Image 1 (cartoon, helix red, strand yellow):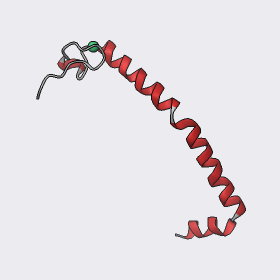
Image 2 (image 1 turned 30 degrees about the horizontal axis):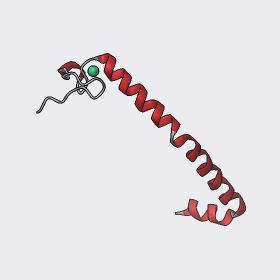
Image 3 (image 1 turned 90 degrees about the horizontal axis):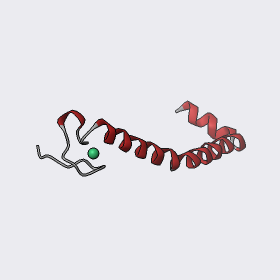
Length: 69
Ligand SMILES: [Zn+2]
């Protein structure tokens, strides 16, 4: 295995916190990842769910057919 530098600060990674150099950098990366994950798909999910609801309400046969499968 090759030693890769910490993606947050560029210092050599330590085995106990790989791929980061420390737990501090690991939590920084986690927070970045979470804020990105929350920012992107929230609005998309909501509109998709709403469209699905409307589709079943306006076409009850389609909903019944889907349940039979
Ligand atoms: Zn680091």
